[in-house]
Length: 382
Ligand SMILES: NC(=O)c1ccc[n+]([C@@H]2O[C@H](COP(=O)([O-])OP(=O)(O)OC[C@H]3O[C@@H](n4cnc5c(N)ncnc54)[C@H](O)[C@@H]3O)[C@@H](O)[C@H]2O)c1
Ligand SMILES: [Zn+2]
Ligand SMILES: [Zn+2]
Image 1 (tube, rainbow, N blue to C red):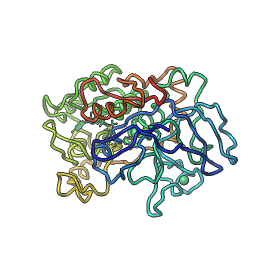
Image 2 (spheres, rainbow, N blue to C red; image 1 turned 30 degrees about the vertical axis):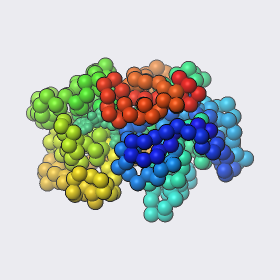
Image 3 (spheres, rainbow, N blue to C red; image 1 turned 135 degrees about the vertical axis):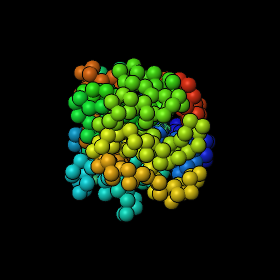
């Protein structure tokens, strides 16, 4: 099969790889119809992780079931399915509680929780930026999509990661109707957090970034855009909230947060959130932070440590929640919102490319080139 393979920092190629196949009776084999490039892929693409060369990338996958193992009862050949980026078992202690992002069965390291397709440090599983994908525990991991799935792929494809992840940010931040919400980052995840806060009837949603194309997408769904290259984003949030700070904050940038000159500061958005959010406010962090980042320009963060303003955070009585999104906890309900036309997450899609052109998609999305806001790939051609 054709697949997008990581070869080294900023080097990905599409080449022939052995076909994905059923390996266990509980597996499902999917012919991928749509697979997206994610900001999480970029940490690996830039060589900031220890991803081995030769691995197939891609954790935002949907497609058609073409074969099921003998132990699969529910999913059928011909079903259109969305696959949560987390690979989980459904029966471990964490999965039983809906914490499928922290599955204890699927990682290959017994000291770890959580696994994903085509991801550094999250198990041996191949990604779906390929013609075919093996889905472990298929009955549990496949979300069977409605009748209109094949025609509305650019909406439904957001169910594998960014829509549930944006929703998770607002869950961790405990967004409620009438709240004011500030979101740092207007990448796909930040934009989905803005959509989620809006769906939860937040009174005011503010999105901070410095890319005009991304900020324009935030405005399209009624959010207030804050360009941090034009002045302090904290001051702007305080102005918008009568000097009190926002009720809720979402971090949708992660450890490669940088200033507008491009210098990385892994504590930048976290500390700005402490300053932008009110006393007793709540903060959800879905931007990725890692335990070790030897290539970080920040000496502390090489060991995963962050100079967090804990004193100010404590004094303000704030709370924080963080981690990988438990996609399966939300994807069925969010699918319902798409089916009923109440959410159209495809508004962020800028490019639909055949898989062959994935390297070009990576290059532009990684450079955050103007107009490259979300790239979706079709293994059979666009
Ligand atoms: N927790 C999860 O389950 C989960 C799932 C998917 C993605 N993620 C993570 O979420 C983060 C965002 O993903 P994405 O696909 O939107 O990535 P992205 O890289 O496309 O977007 C990040 C955005 O943050 C902006 N940014 C950088 N520094 C900033 C700052 N100081 N202030 C405000 N904005 C700043 C960038 O300009 C960019 O637009 C990544 O770290 C990704 O790995 C987490
Ligand atoms: Zn993703
Ligand atoms: Zn599990």
